[in-house]
Length: 175
Image 1 (cartoon, rainbow, N blue to C red):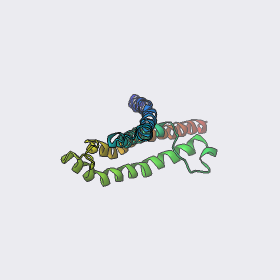
Image 2: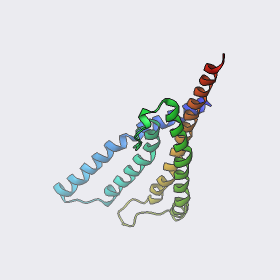
Image 3: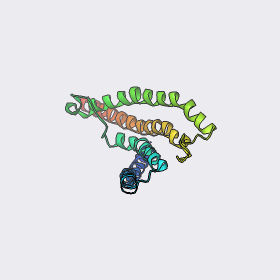
Image 4: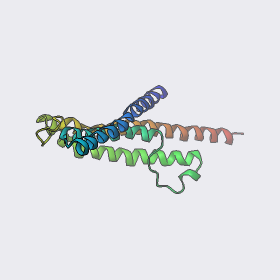
C-alpha cells in the first residue's frame, strides 16, 4: 500500500510542478494580448480564450498537488495545536466526508454537461475562437478525479498515523 501511496504522491508532485509552468505561460500570453491590442491594434479571440484554457488546466491539475503539500486554505483554529493523532483524525474525517462528497458532487453535476460537449465536439461561440471547448470542459471532471485520488492517499496516511499511535499506546500500557 505504501508503494501505491508513493506513486500517487509522485504523480501529484510531477503534475503539479509541470502545470506550475502554465502560470508563467499565462502571464506571457496576457502580456502578448495587451501588447498586440494597445501597441498594434490587433485583437485575437483565440489568444484571449487560450488564457481560460491555461487557467483551467493550472487550477484543475494543480489542486491535487496543493492538497498533497497541505497548502490549501485551512480554517481551523485548533488544528496546529493538536498532537499528530488529533490532526490525523481531522484529516481522515475531512477527507473521507467532505472531500469525497465534494468530488462526487462535482462529477455528478458535471458529467452530462461534459458528455454533451464531447458528443457535439463543442467549439467556441466566436468564429475565430478555439475549437476545443469540449476539452476545456473536461477539466470539470479532471479536477475531482485528481483530488479524489490524492485525497485517498491523504486518508491512508492519516489512518496510518492513527494506527501507529494506537499501537504505540497499546505497547506503552503493557506491563
